[in-house]
Length: 196
Image 1: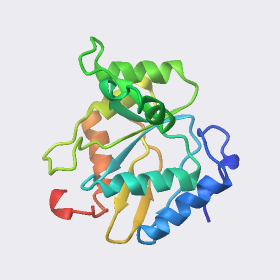
Image 2: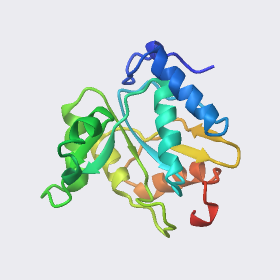
Image 3: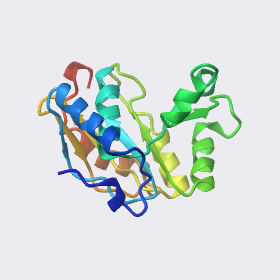
Image 4: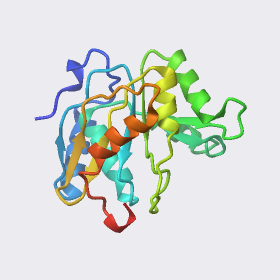
């Protein structure tokens, strides 16, 4: 049984009974996905989702967002936030970022965390669906500088499970935090395991 969004005091929520139903039906249609774990009731967090090996990850994630009734945000290059898709991207939770900004993407997102009472940002730490040897660490610097926890989430296509971790604090030692996050997400098998 999924937790009802109204039971959260701090976590940003969105949607209604119909949108949650659409999300649950979508998870069934996509192969009978189940959610293991529970989103912590936090007003601010960064959610690194891994492994990211397929475009299907987006659709599974969208269904999870709807099924749980959550208001989640993602980062997008500022140049895609133009008419006619700007409204849709913003409604979906998009936050435009400028890669050439003097404060960098990390600084822009830290500023967003400081300005908002509630903000949960979802990030694919690999930065691509292709195989990578190293994850991008910007999300750890965002969490450390904004003093917000990370809540790792893993999509396991082998078991059709969305695994939600307990929140993890990120201190000065980002390598140690990265090892803990990878330890959690490594239990999952991506859609294309050869790209993990």
